[in-house]
Image 1 (cartoon, rainbow, N blue to C red):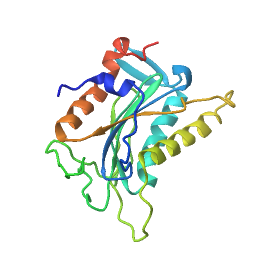
Image 2 (image 1 turned 45 degrees about the horizontal axis):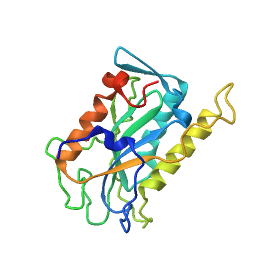
Image 3 (image 1 turned 90 degrees about the vertical axis):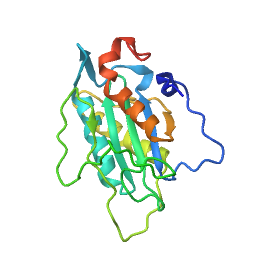
Length: 207
């Protein structure tokens, strides 16, 4: 099936009975409140982050560091939304490159080591250097919703602590998600994320 970039733009319909804490990869989109351009601007296809945008970048990295059962892949910050791939690693899928229930390992996909601190550069797509860390403590598997809620909450708290900012709503209430079912889908979505800034003026979210 041809990849349709509009899939991420409609409200996600949760699958009845689907376990959103099971191992697999999920393409997520989170928009700002009223789609306001809060995170910076794009000029000539390059995204330049402002203070709020830098906070978003930092908190995304932290999400992968504090949650040992997830790995973060392609990610981009746009003026009024973000796109990212969140991978949940379950008991039956222990390799950080697994992207679905059948543990498909794309040859071109490699998890970055988390031994080096992330170097975030404004305007570039980031591959978050996170892999699930082994732990002897059994923790409940997070759901995609758990991860998104924690991330949004942390960003909101920090942005509202900036000088001259107080009580501002940062995010829309919900988020969009698409289950990535195989390697081909992963590669097409990853490419879509990577090229998003270059196509900003054609984007549905363009303001």
